[in-house]
Image (cartoon, one colour):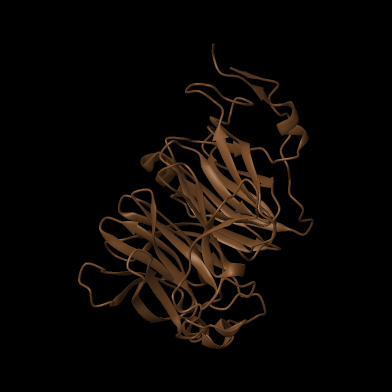
Length: 360
């Protein structure tokens, strides 16, 4: 049962103009797949949901959260997020058939907040015991939460010689398998502070957490490894590519599937489609990266938003684009069987007044 629903939505911290545009078929695509989309932007400090408004249009809901980064939906339907100095778990408090404001059929409320301190956490997952597992980029390791301390280290790359407060290799991406961390991405194998910045063009690696082996190398700032349909997919961000590594073949070969006009981060799948997050460059150009040349060759400007890629053809079949003040996204997630999701922020008036309880 739900009482006292929120009567206002957060507009977020940005005051500059932001414009959204969508492909002509995006609404039909969301309807046919029966999904909505969630994505994060640390730049704007917003968690976004793209859904259907019930009147033949697209609904964009946004909620202000400090530095939202990695986003993971588990099998129970909860959303876990790395956000600033916290790891937050959201639960959908609505039952089937319930709606808020006659529109939202899912309302994600923060129910568990772990205070970790500023660890520059990137990707996040949930293990088989329900514990959050996150990429602790500041300390070059995978970690989980701890009742007493900021974090409990779980694993670090063998080329990083110590657990130290130095971002050496820029560990960033995490692929979960059967409730366990399985693959990670890093920008380099560097073992000195900030060493990864000199290896952005081709120093990127994918590692098997179980075997401690590098399964693919020579990538440009790889992000967002994900297992889907027997393949290890990833974003070769510095080249603007979606591709995969056939780890079963054992040769570490990376196969690009699609070029996207932006710095790609954030990857989710729905059947034969991949949803890819794109960002514009922070300083006018993607300096030193192949992406600059690829954009020039394609006579294209970089853009920010979500592209839906057909995995069979590599073509972009639908898109959601952001222009204006927001130019950088981080993660993307699918919300299945929900048409219009929303969320409320920790510390907000809405979360203080949205009271739910379990049926006795």
